[in-house]
Amino acid sequence: MTISEVHRFPHDPVLVKLLHASKNRPDSAIVIHDICGYERSYSQLFGDVIRTRNELRMQLPSSVIDENGILRQETPYIPVLTRSGYEFLVAFFAIRALGGACIPFGSGILPEEASHFLSITKATCILVGSNDCIERAAKIAAFVNSQGGAAFTLPISHDAEPVRVSNVDIDEDLQLAPGGPGMVLFTSGTTGLPKGAILPRNCFTNVTLANPGEACINYRPGHWIGGARTLIMPMLSGKELYTLGEKGSAKEVLNAFRTHRITQAAFTPTLLRNMRELLINSDGQVPNEKRDEYASWFKALDGLKCSAGMIDHSTLKFWTGLTGLHMYIGYSATELGGLTIATRDPVTTISLIGSPIPNIKVKLSEGSNGEILVKSPYMLIGYVGEDDLTRAAFDEEGYYKTGDLAELRDGQYYFTGRKNHDFAFFRFFRIPLQKVEQSLLDLPYISEACVISIPDHEAKELCAAAIRLDVTSNVPASEISLARIRSDLMQSLPMYMIPAILRILKDGEDIPRNISGKVVKAAVRKELFATTEWWPHSNPPPEVEYWGNMPPIFEAATRPWDWCGVQRAD
Image (cartoon, rainbow, N blue to C red; front, side):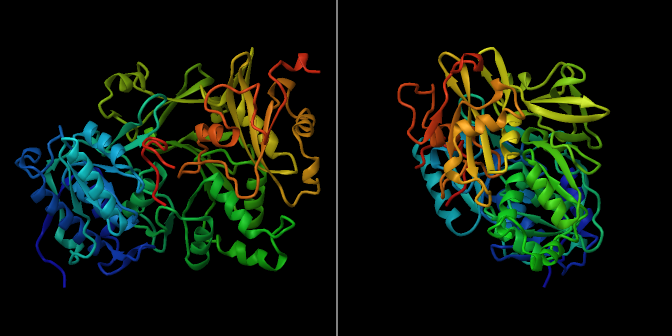
């Protein structure tokens, strides 16, 4: 049975795209395959979206809803707490159908953290998914109310009667500004508490209608830009979506490729490395009898697309060799609303990030080099409650200052590091940490490397490396030391760039990363090098080797805000 009443959505660019894509599919066609147990069509999605929107209208204070049934723009924000990709989509589109802006919460958010986010956004209602999210949301609401605030929870619908696509329409008389608030994603601040990046309604709409048979995969949660994009954009283009939940592992991603015809995927360097480890044997090679089978899993892809970090040579070579596909690199950031710069031709140079995608303007602060500055209809419009921070984020022409550095050569951008955080300022020298990291990975006995700066009272900062030894290497582990590595790196790096501190990872130890796969450098410094401030010269950690802080020429668990409020639950 389907409901025959006509339902109208406001003219929001996301909802316009959603409706257009849905008309390209039969009402009964399953388009969402959620590991949490949901198999849903567009009609079922619309049924749950409409029910959730209507419940919001009934439960929210009348003072925040205008005469058109739309959230007033002073209070547009509604948080969402769920582990399910389908429930996330229902909540996101329901909020947009109410003229609001979605705030995805991490499933492990603590009451104190959620209370802060609710306070600065003036939100009172939390849309809640199933299972353990219900209990967590109840604790959040109880905490907020105990502190004198006002908060309540509302379940996300997941079993409403389907609504035919033909019974959903856009109200052309109810136009919502494309540049108005559409979503808030919290990111770590340079100092203090996380900052909420407000993305416009236009965000996620740079899609074209999919061809029949196209399918994609999501393996990251919606409170990260990579997860939000890979959940929302398939629905706006009409692609079939396989969502592995918020903790899609390398094994689960490989299994999805093995069992389904995936035509599009956004990989991260970490995922590619982890999948590689599952496919190789003890000698570091893919078994000959398995090579064709493994390659066949990826044959529906038109290329390997990687973002959220710089891929290393060995990983690039492995995947292009196994699949026969070319590698393409993308540059993205939360504040930019996702992908901004991408390569059009196959990548052979690791630092190449490509050229701007359509509708994006890019320039460098110093002309042919310097900080990457971006202007686009999809980038943030500001930070929640942070007027000064918002003004400081843009230059005089309205370009967002990314903090990343690049060079422009022959119309292509080459990433050179982070303006402040990807360099170690060692006495009079500036050490590009990414270059050191790549040089370490080029050594045949190292399979993983992370290079950071550690503050030093005398030398300003020291270059520190955490590495994992390659178990398939012919070099015995007993022969690997800081002295050996420094000697080997002299072939590719000037002396001042060579690490002064070394930590070799043991079995079971990992480099701390966030959900998108990026290294959490503060956690690396604390967990692997046992320091949160200055390097302890007099009492360095026993498992760490230290060379000294003189220039080469003179050589003879969880508390609030530990993870910025964006952590996943166990």
